[in-house]
Image (cartoon, rainbow, N blue to C red; front, side):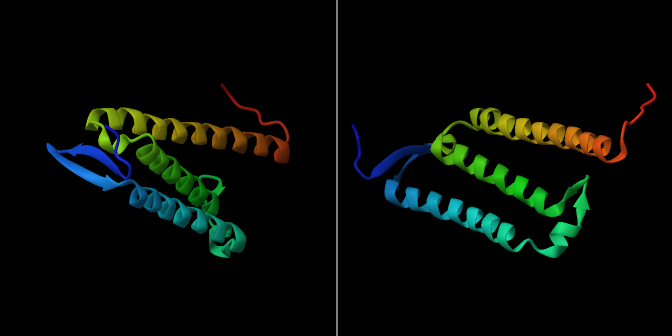
Length: 128
């Protein structure tokens, strides 16, 4: 049976109806707020966030990376219907993606810092 404006989900042994329209507006509002924060920070580029560095990267860039991971997590949580799944499946699906993204970001930052050092200082000799 299909419901026109309601989703049926089981939460801790009881049935709960959630209005589809309110769910869509909720997702829209959350993603709009996070995107607006990214756009405002990108437009105004606060000097304190641009001058401060952490692990060879400006603090503003770390904020962009963090907000992008938050948006990806929320999209997975809502559009892949992870909130209605069992706890184990949620953790395996969502957290493995988050850890993969963090790992790839770390690798890109390490390699980018090495390439920057080579281009600015010439050949880097390492003692293996």
